[in-house]
Image (cartoon, rainbow, N blue to C red; front, top):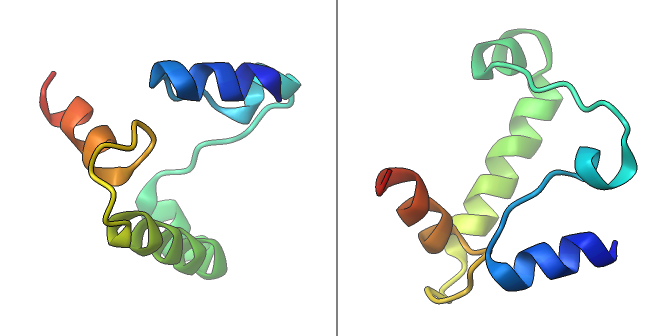
Length: 72
């Protein structure tokens, strides 16, 4: 877990796969919606919670991540 904390301090997003080595499948949003509705609902709740954070300077917050995605 130290790797995750170090990456977050630098503003780098890494997945648990890079730390644990366990494969984590990434599903398309349509796959979640149609075949895994509970996982889709969890995704929406997590996204809403992330967007509701008022801190705009947090490197792991929604506004910083969204800015990184749109700036490329």
